[in-house]
Image (cartoon, rainbow, N blue to C red):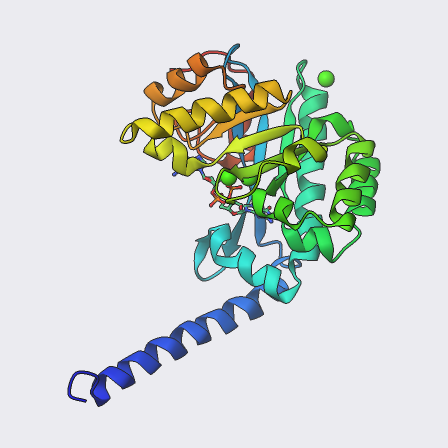
Length: 279
Ligand code: C2E
Ligand code: CA
Ligand code: CA
Ligand code: CA
């Protein structure tokens, strides 16, 4: 037809091949990123809403690409998952984060907890329990300092082996957190069966808080649910003093977001670890 003419078709295929080429290049570079020391962890503080003290930090990976500059995780974690590179990368993240946390816990008088994101591939493809156990042993980190963040979608699997893995991790003494809570369209029944310690309310709820009255009800309900189940509640993506006050009033345990700090390199976040006043 005239509408989908030859030019459009050429344009379409050239876009396709460019993004495919892009993806192939990224994948090739990602293979050497680890050994070339191009991966770094940034840390974002999590604040106890009631005391104003720093509870700990979440480790977030970045890729310092020699030609492209800083690449955010959303652009390479999916590639790492598809290629299996997430296994060595994930082990590296865990080791670096535990080493850093151990250093901070020796340095400061108060505990500095560390939250590490785990991908579902790390959970099913690999002996994650052995990896966590070995990493704790090698870094000397107190297991109670470590929290593993798993996205809610993982809990939908609800298979025997997943339940057994979670139970083994809990026996090691580490904490389990459900990331992006409320986005998985899941039944809530897993909350009573699985060894979970905290839930992170998804950022989309926080963003929507001002515009939609119903969102406030959902957030309240999640915080109440967490309290009744003896789980810690965490709000992430907190960007304004109003949002901070809201979660403080609602009794959400921890808050995290740009209002307090963007994720920063370890040496820059240290200035915040002793801070007790916000806003
Ligand atoms: P996530 O675990 O939900 O992490 C929260 C994301 O929100 C981070 O993006 C963080 O920088 C961003 N963020 C924090 N506060 C605010 C705020 O106030 N406003 C806004 N708009 N955003 C905020 P980031 O670092 O780009 O990470 C994106 C995702 O990549 C993470 O989402 C996580 O799923 C994944 N990821 C990051 N590091 C790792 C890792 O080491 N391993 C695995 N498997 N996934 C990781
Ligand atoms: Ca200490
Ligand atoms: Ca997370
Ligand atoms: Ca999240």
